[in-house]
Each structure stands twice: as C-alpha cells, then as structure tokens.
Length: 355
Image 1 (cartoon, rainbow, N blue to C red):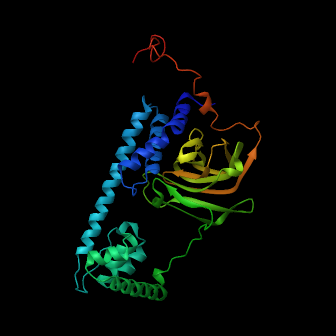
Image 2 (tube, rainbow, N blue to C red):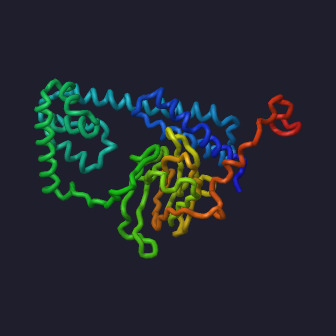
Image 3 (cartoon, rainbow, N blue to C red):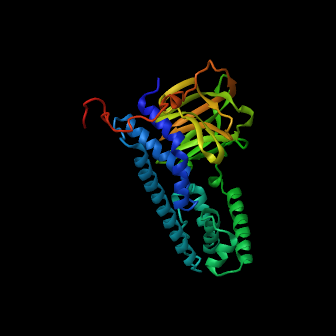
C-alpha cells in the first residue's frame, strides 16, 4: 500500500513535473536536458525521504534543486566550450608537440593514444569535430582555414586512424553488440552507463541485455523506448520483465510513463517504492498503468541508479483487465474531492501538534 510520501511524489509527477521542465527549458540552453535534470532532482528528493530526511515543501525544493543542477551543467558546458576554444587557438606546427585531447577522460585509452599519434593539426580537427561537436564550417572559422582544408584533414585523419587500428592489435577492442532497434540509452548521465547484448547470460534460454555503470555515477542511466499510445488508448497496460543484478549500490527497476498532449505526464511508476538492489537472481517484475484517452505516448525501460550491473530479459507489454491493480493506484486517491481547510482552522500537523 502506498504511503503518504509515495502519493506526494506521484502527485508531484502528475501535476508539477512538466511545468518545471518547461521552466528550465526557457531559462537555459537546450544543451541542458531539462527533463533529465528534473528527474535527477526528484531522485535526490526520494533518496532523502527514504533516509528519513523528509522534505516539508516538495515543490519549492524541487525548483531550487533542479535549477541548481541545470546551472551546474550549464557552467560545465561553458567550461568545455572554453577548453575547446583554447585547443582551437593552439595552432602549433611543431610536429614534436603532443596533441592534448580536450576531454581525455571521455575517450577510451587506445583511441586517445591513436589520436595522439596523428599530426597536431589532424588531432586538433578530429577532436573539435567529433568530441567538440563542431561543424566543418565552425572549425574552419575558428582555425582560419577553408572548409575544404577541414574536410581533407578529416578524411586523411580517418584513413590514418583506420590504418593504425588495422595494423596495431592493441588498438583493436572486442566490439560489444548493442541493440539497434527500439531501445536507446537515456537518463540524467547516460555517458556513465552502457548497455549490450549479454554474451553469456540468458534467461530460460532467451537472450538477455545488460546495463551497467562504467564510471563514477552522479545520476542514473536507462535503457528505454517510446511509442504511440494510440493502440492502448483507454486500456490498462502492464509492462513486465525479468531482472537480475550484481553489486547495485542504489537501485534498479522497470519503469513506465504515460504522456499526454504537450508532454504532460498522465501516469508514472519507476518502482521507487519497491526497488531492487544489491545482488539478486532472476525474478519477474511489473508496472501497471492506465492509459487515458488523451494519452499520446508511452515510454518504458529499465532504470539503473548508481554503480552496479543489471541484466534484463523476457519483456512483455500487454493490455490487462481491470481486476489487475495499477502500481500507481495511489495517485487518484491522493486527491480530495473538494478544497479543504480554506479558513486555516485546522492545525497544520494534526490536532495540537507543533514543530
């Protein structure tokens, strides 16, 4: 049975989540993923609540926390821009100079080594284009060369990298097979997680996928997909699957969200109140939501918060009868039928109780 605090979080998701996302989108560049920021703030609020540090007024706390997270990300983005500008200004022609990749920690060691073996100009343009996400025109403007020069340099650099990879076995890494259809990585910090088809792990003879942290984690990663709600309109939908995990410090779980017009959230459950953590064997889990007539999209996936590794298999999405209870059933019950205590005559924390 959902607690009052669970209902409070569910009500916030339904009534205020989309508004805060829109507010952050208007305040910060689109380079700051507003929805991911708000989701991360909500997870932090839930973690505080689990530890018994209840947030008395959730909405203003969420506004402050999400704004601070967005501001921090914006500052980091600007710092990375300045670092790239510095790289662009370094136009040394001395071939003995060692090219410094703008963000070495973000590159696999062998690839960083290979780029370091390119000429300074080739390494510079490769880093600006592929890791600074700058267009050919932008690079040409920053380095004061023609677009043709940038294109030729990129072409020659790619050929040189391909030659090095083919000739140098230490640069060849086993390629892990990822899913190309439907599923994709998302979350507050997707770069800190990776997914792949599991090489050795299966579930009752069925293929399994794995989701794991690959670096220090500041938020969460999710393997997810989104699809039209039209086929499920006015139905009760169950998303189920088998999960197992190893060394999960925070939690892992299935999640599903029903979105309405304009991206507003109509229903949501991420198993926050029944998390899976630590090391577990295979077990089946499910989330069940109602899809209203006004629903436009359904998103679902597997969420991993913090360090660890999880495996997943045997997914199924199906329409179920009304005898199956929804896992967010407390959302409606949390709302009173009429406004209450408008004259402030009742004590805030129960009869005679003071804080």
